[in-house]
Amino acid sequence: MAAWLTVASGVHQRRYDPFDISIVAIEGDDGLLVVDTRVEPGEGEALLADLGARFAQPVRWVVNTHAHFDHTFGNQVFGPGTPTNAAIYGHANIARHFDDFEGPRLAAWRADPRREPDRHWGEVRLTPPTHPLVRAITLDLGGRIVELRPQPEAHTDTDVVVFLPAERVWIVGDLVEESGPVMYGSGSFPLGWPDVLDALVAEMRADDVVVPGHGRVVDREFVADQAGELRLVAERFRAAHADGLTTEQALAAHDDWPIPVAGLAGAAERAFARLDGESAGEH
Ligand SMILES: [Zn+2]
Image (cartoon, rainbow, N blue to C red; front, side):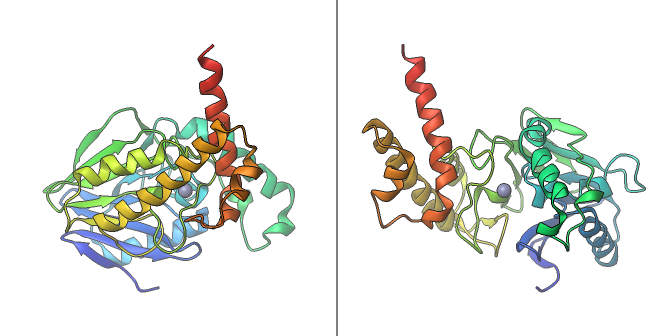
């Protein structure tokens, strides 16, 4: 992958393997804001070194787009007790998501190191945000304004969109993916997700820059298309649930899913559990 790609004035994306993950560095007069921290502490260290080689400012702020491991497991390199000692911003639900999903995931990996021998899961210290967000806030980086906007339930219940109103840049984490199909992942909300994207699309302009969690920079039209795919999946889940189908029957009922069907089993379970809860609530 190439090094830093400048996507707008003072805003730079770098795509890191593994997972073609988007890291974004935003320059302010008072310091650097970094979006997401890679997959494990060693990768976080490498990121910190890359930032130091490219930018004059110290890292003062970190933002997690959501809780998933490939976006947060480098946090400990930047957070409390480190020389960097940056403020880590993220959704207030991240700590609970760590308890429910990333913690157990880590425990399972550690229990069977042969599964991923190249990984260093033993070094990971789950590091939730030092500044948990319950509502949108604005950060002034010095000559540059950044909005941090917690989102309703979508890819997870920890999604935060980073928006630069002057530069018209949206950094959206895994709400949008370009280099592979949309991933529902752990703790997803398949029914609400398309609404969240549609609300963002309604605010976007045609030439706005959108940085996805994985892949190259895209635009409003790309986001609208992905919202349409997610909406089709959600509508089919609702219809199948209303017809009394099982999740397996729901997935087997169509051979033209917009997302590979192998990635939909977990999403169907999540959607049906939510719909079961809604119908139980009616009585
Ligand atoms: Zn994710």
